[in-house]
Length: 313
Image (tube, rainbow, N blue to C red; front, side, top):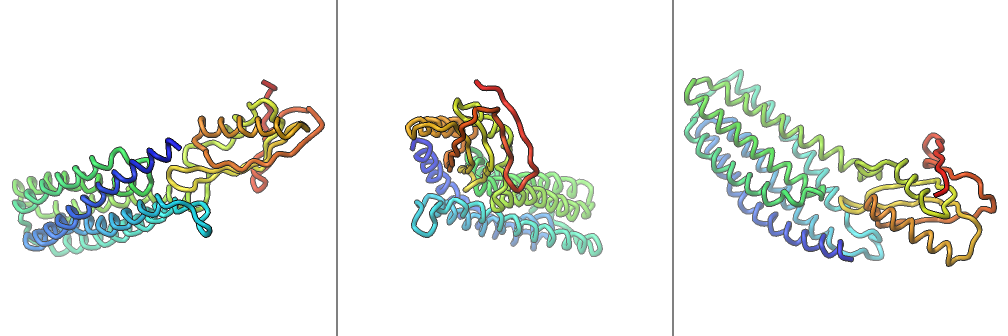
């Protein structure tokens, strides 16, 4: 109950950060696109388009934060925890499209170079760095949420792009080599793709109900085997309901015993799963056996059969 309250509190705080970021980012986009066109700077235009993808991204993240806090109902029995994951996936696809567009624009600028207003690049680059750096700082503590991590990485990439724009503007001013501008466009595209691939990988794993990132099926089953009274664990399935919530279902063999005893074992298994692995939603089906035998662990039925033995503790 306490962790749910904390998550709700952090979600409310993050919502305000996202709202402020939305207003400031929209103003920054308008400035970068306008000044970029006037100064013929592809780097500024590229960063403007990059920041423009932040606008729908922030709007979707705002909506996702609202839905994530909604309780389960008769139709959405797990609630809306995956709303943020789905939004992160869509945002990442938008990033890939933008990166491809910027690469095409960069190629055109190399083939048909244009003079670049380095002074305007420098001023707007500094303004953008302050804006994106501030948003990244505001969301730094919320990175455990995949939806907010997508926004954080997005804005951190923007801030790094702004540093490149500032350095590039100074180099263009000193050397007069305008090819630096499309080169920066390619650099920004690389940063966008890097962040997009990471988000797509994590969100796809959750949407496909894969094993949560950083978790080991063998370690989880072995921990359950360490609970006194557990004889065997099999048909283990672990997946993520959202960025913060993991679930598990399994079959557990125990000796034939009264229901009160099996409830004690179930409670101990749940405690181990919650404290050691952060798994708070569990479905455990007991199967009774009359044979003491050895302890065994079996992987899910769909996976190749493997066994691990442990000694009775």
